[in-house]
View (cartoon, rainbow, N blue to C red):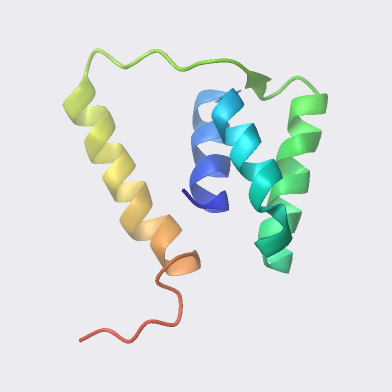
Length: 89
């Protein structure tokens, strides 16, 4: 899990799970400055009621949802997160 994954999923669905909030709280000491800013922004969205603590119900069109998630992971999260600075072969 990365901060980017949590933020994008929360913004997309309007929901953040208890496990995600726990992960953010337990890993905050290792966040970069940009990740810290994103987590703070997410907290403000929760305070404003735009992102709510809850659970997500699986989409009935699971294949489409997984395809969308894979697209977001490859095109948005990876360039900013885990593989940042990795040299392509």
